[in-house]
Image 1 (cartoon, rainbow, N blue to C red):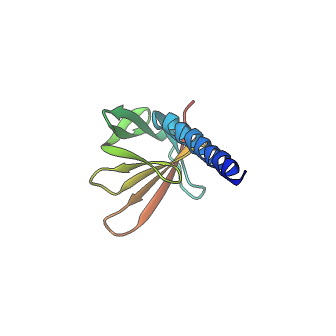
Image 2 (image 1 turned 90 degrees about the vertical axis):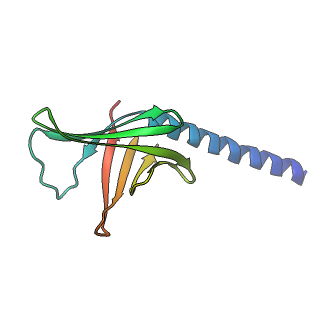
Image 3 (image 1 turned 60 degrees about the horizontal axis):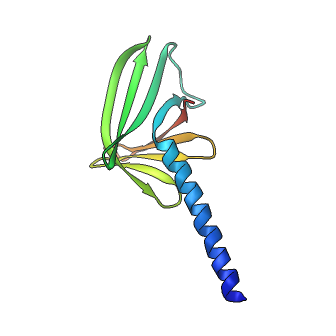
Length: 127
């Protein structure tokens, strides 16, 4: 009886893992809009979009800054997908991480600067 109960518990864990993994993978493709921090000064007509698209076994991440609906700056890099406690993209050869939050359909971009500081930006998925 204990063996059967353990098998069912294991199956539940595997199903939960599978659902969470599938939800994270479904979030990887898409476009996200940056949400300014509460204390951040927002310039009218400016916005930042982050888009992710598959590139073979890797993912291409593109951050585009717009001012007055014109592209002001673009940053592009390749990332690899990982799933430990949640889905995330890790920049290849760099210091940026995209952490996916499937419950809120959001993404956290964590960047480590050369000065040793860490910045975290919140992006909400455009549906």
